[in-house]
Image 1 (cartoon, rainbow, N blue to C red):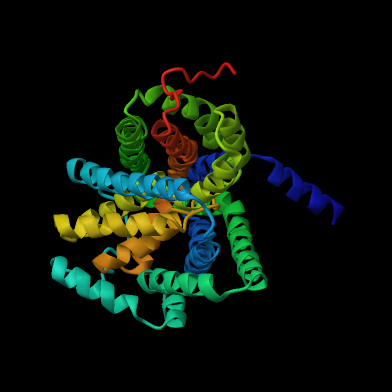
Image 2: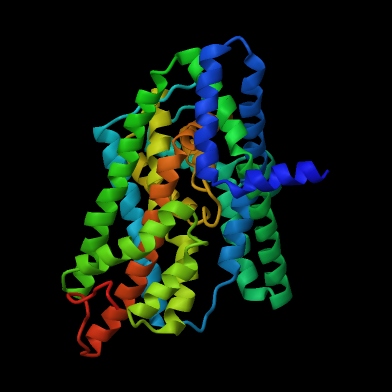
Length: 418
């Protein structure tokens, strides 16, 4: 027993990123040396199966809990911060659509005939959307109907916000934390699952599969940099009428860098609060807006959901017109708000987005599996973008109030030497 505990402690002491990297290497080696050992792919099947089981519950409890915790006493600056968060996330999803149209990606999937009912246009997409939306909530969770899960989570969250007492809110918070912890346990075993998935992919397709994934990573990271260095600065610069880049660069250096390695917006909250203090922001504002941002400010997640979903649609030759892509962007914006606090959380929402195109859950979970394989870069960049922009927009909201009050803005003099 003592030896077992030491092994577990040693395993957990190693960075998850490094463990996943080892899992990828081991999977490649086994696929090249013992391709006949097909049982190794079973680790990947177990991993994906676990994610399929927990993902609908995760979406429901996270969104419900987040919505019911609202505080009606917050001033108008919080409203502006929320506007920034949602606007940035929506623009990120639209940018991802543009990247997907310019650089269409094809994924390596099996059973690609598993499309439930391919929609032919915006009318049928809307019909499928509203039909799936009103399915019984328990049935939606059981059948992984993510449209219904998200819809009923919003309904219950808003309803409970007005009637739930503190003990009920605490109970839902505890449930959300428990489900998140269960997901983290599953994610902690990701190296074994990734090993099995990589073994299956390489043994069937060879090493050239990584060149395809390399291109996909470039598309994802490229879209994130456009949001980071173009879209977000435009939002901040428009409202503040000053050069936004000193603020952007400082947040990237002091928040984005640590978030890249922690891969957790929640874990980066203390770093962000410390940075807000250095910037001279009001503690009453950033003590609320930073944790809120870790929940709903998910530009990187929206990019991941949108690009991976459209790659799946392109692979299956599912037609996607512009109005449908816009609906996907809105859905990715809403869904991304439920991806907080969990490593790889955005990947678990891909099946929800895929469902509007009639793509089956089995195929969608294969897309999720590919996401975990590329997650060493994708998830790190996604978290860095999400977390650093929490501070960017919290600062922008307060600076906007300073501007209205006639105070001098620090936009052109923000320095890390404080």
